[in-house]
Amino acid sequence: MTGMTMFFTDQPIDGIVAFEGISGGIRRYRYKDITISDLTPIECVLPRLVNYGVRYIDPDLPLIKLAKEYFKKGGKEFIVINIWMGYPTPSHELMPEVVIDIKDTVSQGWPRTFIETLPDEIMDKNYARGEGAEEFLARSPSKYDPWFEYFTKYRLIDSGSVL
Image 1 (spheres, rainbow, N blue to C red):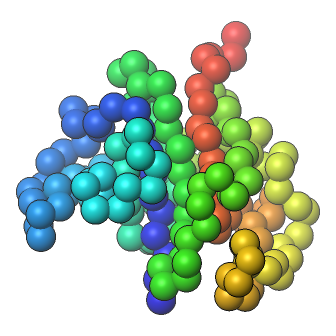
Image 2 (cartoon, helix red, strand yellow; image 1 turned 90 degrees about the vertical axis):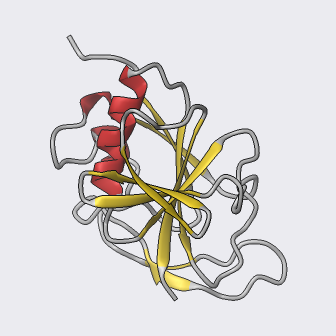
């Protein structure tokens, strides 16, 4: 089993990313070191938004940079969900939502508002969600080892520059 990061926007990301081509009916894009797949017609997790997928290779920081560029071009919504392939993904309504203001993001650094939500130490955590869901044990992120947690909906926002 592998991980996948999905992100969702209210507008397509064309113009911000480089179009690589179509493979298996899926449009593929490139942004920095990550390949992005447009999963809207196949994997419609959030129906009113454009659905994108990134195979997990630690894409989290490039996604924050992509979100910053997206907001500069007038985008309004950017949501990230990290999932574990092969495990039944709970409905997005059951996922806790964390709002992250990316205005204070520095290059290769996590936003302070995200770091503040994390525990001091990594913990083992049971991610089973909903009745009848299989047990799924994994580690949580921490202040010193941050990453997007499984089955959590992260709503990225940019409230503007700090004066």
